[in-house]
Image 1 (cartoon, rainbow over the protein chains, first blue to last red):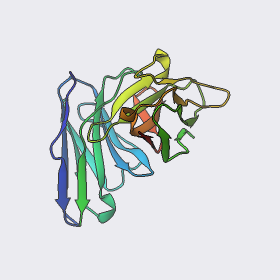
Image 2 (image 1 turned 180 degrees about the horizontal axis):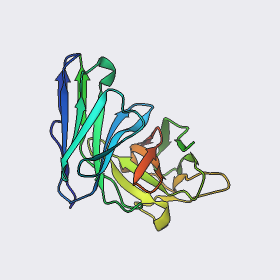
Image 3 (image 1 turned 90 degrees about the vertical axis):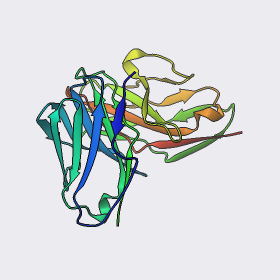
Length: 113
Length: 109
């Protein structure tokens, strides 16, 4: 059974703080993804990684960075949190073949005050 | 431009009524499409993919290339179908998905 875990379910941070969101998967998946989920906007891809130390920008990378030092772990970093980054953040992983399912974590609800 | 559009934010039906959640896409090439579902307090999960031509929990979706649509249908809605539904399009060959805005399905008793 695929398991994708995220370090926190809820997080409250102040404007300007550096924020780390961690995601771990236990299925040896090559691909990992970070999305944000906002009402009326659906899921928007922030960054994805198809291998260790490899990363590509998604649709909305501004204000975010990522790190993938180990295959199972993909971190999303908010360098200086802003109120417009208040959102639900979802991590996902998948095998590299195109028709492979993406498996999602439970999400981290981030509130930036 | 590659895009997925779900025109309805909310679809409310009574139990036993037919359901159709609309999805339209924009893609040059042969599209690969999916429906994902998120039940209350659960994580997002795959419902079905068009290439499998499967029926899951009574739901089906047919790819209509002429209308560039991939609508999700169920003949008789159940209360447990209440959830958020996302249509998604595979972008390129990297495994990236483009998601629609999502439709909340509310099935009333």
